[in-house]
Length: 481
Image (cartoon, rainbow, N blue to C red):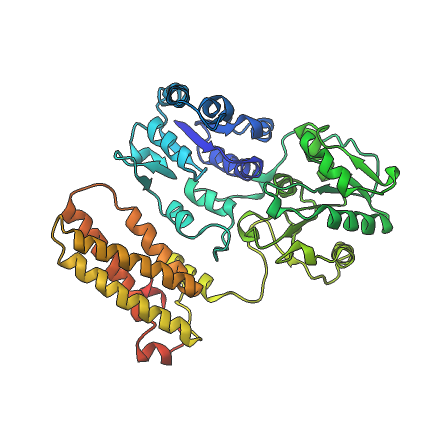
């Protein structure tokens, strides 16, 4: 059996894929497993040796087309030719199973090409023969419809990966199969990564400087990690600090050394960036600084001692309060951190309506009570618009542009209702995704599938607009989609 896993995103996603590869190897012990990863981020996967890593040199394939603003058509086709040749070599291997964990447009086209359009061998994003997105499995449909910043999803990316691959993780999947040699001599040090994938996700340098000074006051030696390009950023974060109080290892550590360094640390502290996921393997106390630009439920740490410190805006972060809570937490005292764990989500007291609605739609849990009149009003509006669409679908005549225009306008109104009342957005996103999943076929078949989806929408909305619903505390699993 031959299996191809595509993970063409960044360092953190590769790290989060490693335990899934381990579980996949357990599931198929005799399989040949290949991992396609960007060369820039594939080093972590190579040292674990759960798969044969195939480097994808994105610069080589894409640079001819995009290195200049005024690129020529010849340059574009040069890129396409390079990519086709690369994918031809992979298609020739005739994989029995192709798992696309990248969730990107380019990876979907590559998956379609490598699979020769055979969707029975594919999980994850691919393409139909007409070029439109093909979402063959339910987990990938969930990812498309519900995952991302400013969405209420609370399933972690690792859990979604395992669902696509159809495996369950155990402690052994986080085992480090190589010897750790720690380059640090300090007994009490903290590893800090001050960079992030985007500036909006990064704690400002001035705040990092305050945090570092508070750590030093408490006899914690600061160790900065990162890439060579982050040295200037680190210099600004360490401005005015005594040289003996910190160590800068940016651009100086091999991958194995990075694991050893974090394993030996008293704790790790950083924003939304790849290195925090090393803590999942080392079980290091991990303190993740998160803001509204990130959904920590999806990409936060999953180590045994995962902690998240959330601020809407990092400008309001109090360095002294943060460090005090880190020290309290490490001594087993009560702290203000949101606590997590390796095999379950983060522990919080309140679950918003929209998350409960997601659980009802996708996992069969009870539909939540709508405690606010504006939520019921939104369901009422959605139901009315849905009736308009159903009427047009039931009376649709092929080639009737007026009916098509009415349906498009109604769909836009649904999106506007979801923007005004975020509590109902998961239902609208579910509806949109399910219609996208309808593949190319004849008009009658498409109409029948669309009608079935909108009838499901009607049944769900009706739960919230009848008198009996308002008298009850919730609806039960048999009403789920």
